[in-house]
Image (cartoon, rainbow, N blue to C red; front, side):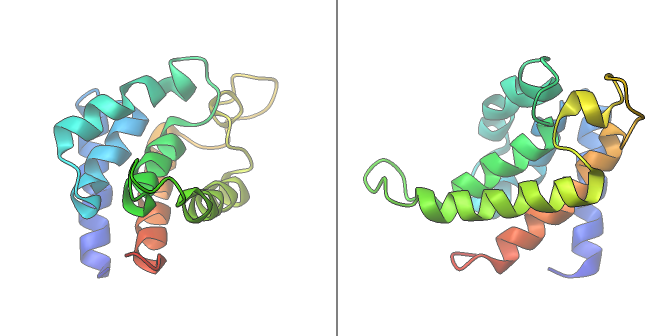
Length: 143
């Protein structure tokens, strides 16, 4: 994907987050058109994933939104439930890249809600996940 298009998607994700979309929704809605999902479905699907899984500050919502988009791209649906391996491989790439860049995948650790320092802001996590998700989608055999 061309650099200008990537930057436009990053800006779109920031705009959505600024409109009170949670981190997962910002990612899912920004990338929905790339996987054949309408924005309303992506928004509703990702609603419970924000705040680190329903506000529990577990897995970062931005990562969860990216995982949902990757699943939409690689899964063939209930008629062929054998695509999990391909999906899991790509999801692991996202999780590993994010952890390597930011030091954690847990919202509470990233936000510094534990004993440690703030590792990354929510806008920073959103930016990272948009870029990483786009890269994985572009490199995927089905993409």
